[in-house]
Image (cartoon, rainbow, N blue to C red; front, side, top):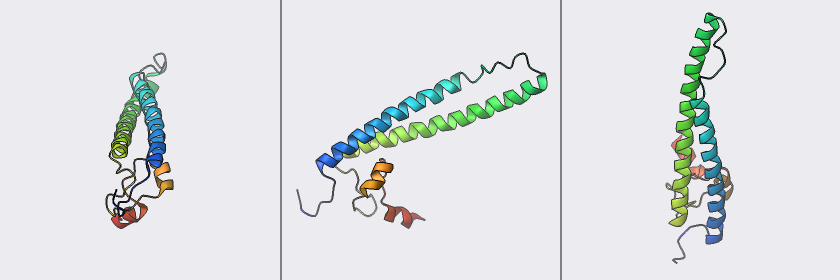
Length: 126
């Protein structure tokens, strides 16, 4: 391996892999909860309440379904980003900033394991 190559060690990558896999498992569990809430939204038990409240409740249910749908989309993107991070681990490119080519701070990767930009690169975007 060339001495100018910058990457995390195999043991670091193995630790990140475990962390990411745990996050994927939790995210998939959360996605299932969001989807089940979305599927069961119509069972609110308001059938015997006043028509005015029912109309309000139906509007609320539509908003709830939309927000659940948005949550599900965000969760699916999060899972996809985490799976892409696993691919970068396999390629041994994980943790390398795609702009600066420097290592992304380990603490940042522990908090945002799917990060592809260092704080320095992120700040340059602003």
